[in-house]
Image (cartoon, rainbow, N blue to C red; front, top):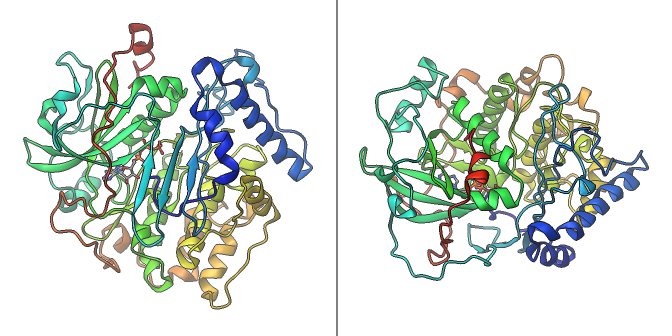
Length: 495
Ligand SMILES: Nc1ncnc2c1ncn2[C@@H]1O[C@H](COP(=O)(O)OP(=O)(O)OP(=O)(O)O)[C@@H](O)[C@H]1O
């Protein structure tokens, strides 16, 4: 996850953050207490029946409690917190589909603090330094140096090296199956790591060069031990599986995934423009990007996938100016509804707060928040405290800027409807209702999909591997690769 963008509230969370930072597997009950308090306060806020703080599942399924805490508007500090516990007494909420009873793991985010200026990507990141690797590294690394054995289990993907910008539409038309083979077999040492361009909860994202095709790509490296520690195995496997299934011009495309005995790896096309948010904060310029997001959401929902993490940080912009939605860590294939409390506070839909069970409607809500934030510069529901944010979300009151475009305002209002059965996008015509809104009156949706709309702005990049739109990250804190034991390794059998 990018920590960049709008840095968010923090002071109230700092103490919690410290607790979390010092937490180990076996000592997380304090943190869970904090999480329980959150849940209880939400319930109290609404004067509604209490959200269960223990799992109702009979099979002791592990619970999920997932937040991305930490966005402050115009401020400069954000804090993401993470905590886990596998003790059933600490269970807060099970993440399962209503019908499947599918279990999931438990999480608040890992401790880090990010600072960002509102005008660009200047982010300072402090990741968990407990396992910081002090040894100095060269700027570029061989992927093989990271210790991926030949015997690693690797996922043969489509192996399609062709420049995505040129082939996106072709491949989408010819195949929606990401695993369709094109003949190439990837190998880990085909990749040379050049530079870190982002950090996430469990690892980092690096710019790489594919030695075979000579193309740039992004390698997301997740430390298995961290994934286990944060009880995120299911989410990571979900992320990979969903990414393998999808192929859309405005969604990041996974080229290959693999693992060794310490890390999970996902190789994506490199999106060199950085975050969209950096470029566009202007009503006139944003409608074509919005339409790309709508197109992507419609596609995901058509596959019964909810994305659940729509926010400016997760919208990257390609060299051609088009959007790429990234970070599918919260995405989920749904049979019906899900109950995981997850998301980023400012973007969470009321039904998530109310623990009513949620579905794709949460993405349409988040779209309303996103459009508002893109147009106004800060999110519609904001407070220094997360509870204040939830209270505002539930109240449904939105402050409107006087000069807000009335058509945009109408769209936002129809997306930010508390009653999800009346929310645009979630009614019987689905995404068509959104697409037919006046805000999109001049939009030809086929043209959107085929990238025929001229992007309002092109990112300032000099070449495909340009990293100027990303923050600088230390290459000195690569964590040592520690092999996990066989028992733990088996947890990743499905990756
Ligand atoms: N394909 C890509 N091209 C360029 N940069 C990327 C790409 N994928 C990710 N990044 C950068 O790396 C950052 C972290 O990526 P991502 O959000 O996927 O990590 P994460 O580990 O899932 O984070 P989280 O903590 O939210 O789980 C992004 O915000 C972005 O800046």
